[in-house]
Every structure is written in C-alpha cells, then in structure tokens.
Length: 136
View 1 (cartoon, one colour):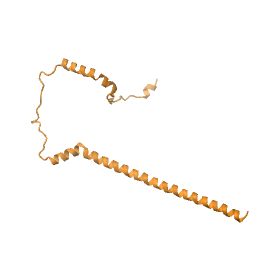
View 2 (spheres, rainbow, N blue to C red):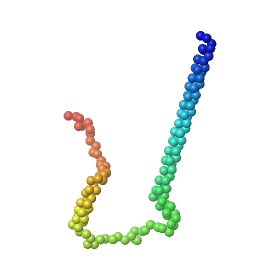
View 3 (spheres, rainbow, N blue to C red):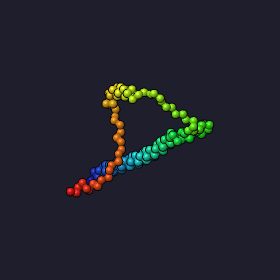
View 4 (spheres, rainbow, N blue to C red):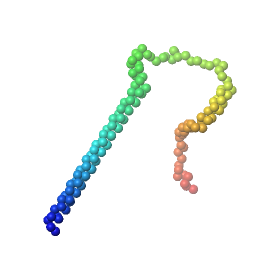
C-alpha cells in the first residue's frame, strides 16, 4: 500500500475514534446528571414527608387543644355538678319510630344499591389443631 492511501484511512479511523470518545463522554455526563436528579428527588421526598409530619402534628387535636387553652386562659372543663341531664318523658313510641325507619329505608333503597357496604367486622378465630383434621 502506498502512504497516500493509508493516511486518509488513518484520518477517518482517528475521526471515528474521536466521535466515539465524545459520545461516551456525553453518555457518562448524562448518567451523572440523572443520578444527581435522582438524589434531588429523594431529598425532596424526605423533605415532603417531614413537612407532612409537621402539618399533621400541628393539625392534631392535642396541639390545637393546647394552643387554644394557652390563648384562652379563663377556660376550664365543666364539673359533673354543672352538667344537666335531660330525660325525654312521653317521647315517640316504638311504633312511630318503626314507621319512620321504614320510610327512610324505602327512600334510601336506590341510594343503598350504589353505595359501598359497611366494613367487615373483625372477629377472633378459634384456635383448632389443624393436624387433627388430617389424622383419620
């Protein structure tokens, strides 16, 4: 081969090697940027959780009650002597109450078809020997 034919081949190979190296550098740069963004997302999620925890703590009944009692120093809880009980005498009879409940069930029939049922109640399970079922 002549030197004049080898030099363009070497130049093109060197150019392809430079392009390949540049692309590899771009890939690594993008990978580092993505990793940095992932770290930023993790930090933002942690910060969000901390802020949500602070908001929940500030909205809690304990905190609201304490801040309310601090701002209203003359408030106090009522004694049992100051509480009045009201007893209904001659109120609605059972038949009137059952008629009222029947009317509400009739009017709520369509509503009850499309609403979710009440939650299942948790019950304890009797402990039995499972292996006794297999023994015969």
